[in-house]
Image 1: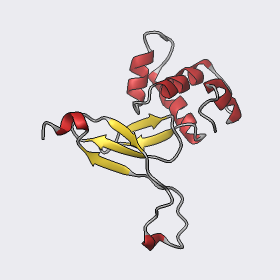
Image 2: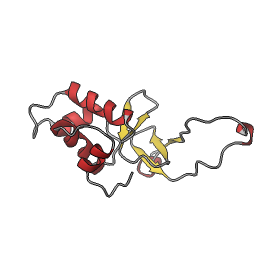
Image 3: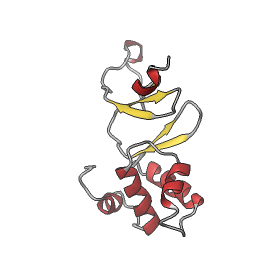
Image 4: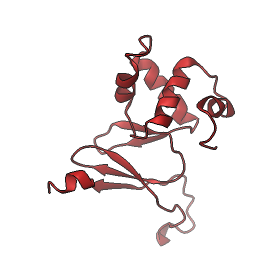
Length: 137
């Protein structure tokens, strides 16, 4: 699915009925590549959208993930983060500030011990200190 398509077109292409909350939250995720949690999404949107509830944010993000329009990233602290980039890539988690960054990697470089296995999913997560926090260690 092309990132160039509008949020509305991407929802329709996935067979999801376009509603105001779905469009609002999906567009937020496309525009904010910070891997936000539902709490962050709600916090950022609630003032300009007073009828939006936290439950709606949870329901919409789960629907978007179910339809593979967003990727769910579970951080080491157990929080669910959402990423609108669904192409294969890895994530770096900063142990100090909690930021999550994308990095490129190749899904075709599987370990030799998995030859012959049916691999249903692969994720790459690196942990450490981001460039800003690394100076403090």
